[in-house]
Length: 340
Image 1 (spheres, rainbow, N blue to C red):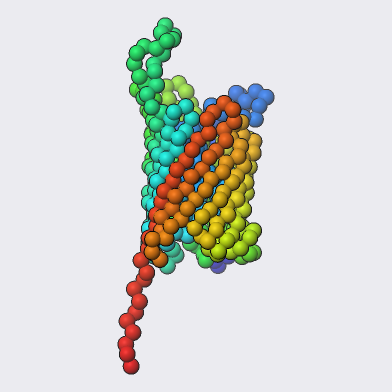
Image 2 (image 1 turned 180 degrees about the horizontal axis):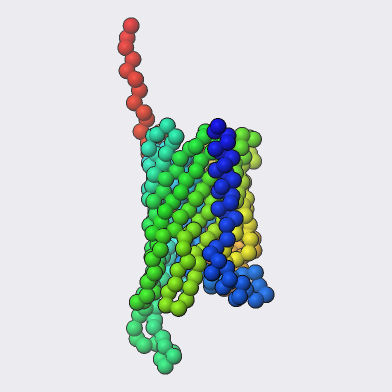
């Protein structure tokens, strides 16, 4: 019975991941496609496509099947079933053209029989003040224009079997540009499956699924993303003195061609990590690198610090990311032992 449920859920998720955007948007895309495979500009809320968390980005965004900490909430929420107790993370990204991202999340394992995990996430994007210009005053009006984006989400992850996890996140999203703003709701769905062949795991994630929106006379669709990935330890065992994790995945965006991500992470004594990754079929993104440090304060408490650098070609300065996080859990109470 469990195997049947597992197969049904895996197939159903695959069908969702292959589902196209709304018909009206598809027709609009086809009409405006011309002779290119790229539809950049037809999708909205683009800030949702920017990766959050230095660890995942340092691995070239090849994180869908790796997701095993609190940052999984942004990539594949099914990976949250690996979290013990309570975990939190906060990240800062120095983004393009003096803009920046702030993101954070807190998740807690409920201790249920199926390892249920609940949590919340926040992503904030700020551009800073932008000088206002008009057709008649191209040098500026002397006023400033503000813009910003915000996404707040709630997640629930659960282990359906000892090898298969499923999760969903629902987010409220708001985008504001000067006097105009738009709000909507999106849904993320993720699965994580341990195959039983050594440490190989497979994962799928659908992110930013939601209704088409319209601002004034401009219609746009959500920045829908489909990711299918695999990961395994090529050297050592997870949690051992030294181990190397290698991951790869495909990434299909509703406004772009199929892309691919590959990445690797080397942990030494479960204390220090080296990471690197590469992204294929991007106009600007290419390689990324990063480091991580984990410090165990006590057996049940730990702090993490991660830093990443992403190359954006010759036209943009490289974004820098800094993430800090922590985790703690309480041991279950031990039954009293009576002396004979």
